[in-house]
Image (tube, one colour):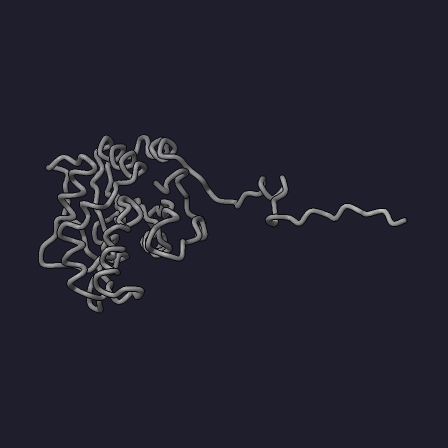
Length: 218
């Protein structure tokens, strides 16, 4: 007679070990409270923020722009018609990030001057400044017009603007934001880009030794 043997069950997925779950990347994580504490005793200063994926989750407008101006391609980012739309109303569909609300409130309380420096292309008119003022409850006396650094030859780069405005702390989600800050001797602090952002691939937070804010993807 033959004895039947039970066959080994086929795994549904690779699975994970406890060691893999416990593995952490050596990143300098910080909280908004820790940043505030590190600035105690320091006089008011100029601080800067990138906009897209840093203070605003603006993917809805970019998603709409791609569908309307260059379906399946990135050409829309070089189309002036898209930027006219994006800079003049489409940010009404952008969601302010909670971490940005906390950071901006903290810097306003300190009396810091806040600048928004974006890589967006400049347009003849814009409502982005007003949107940011409303979203983050910035008093009129503290509002500075958005700086559109763009990416065209002859335009000031983010690095030049950070230097011109004497910015000491700059918050951003991209590698370029962090390196621009480091290039001028400013403190570059990373905010996490939401995983469902239209701006892919996601950057490697902490790659330049910068501080990374916990829970800053939203």
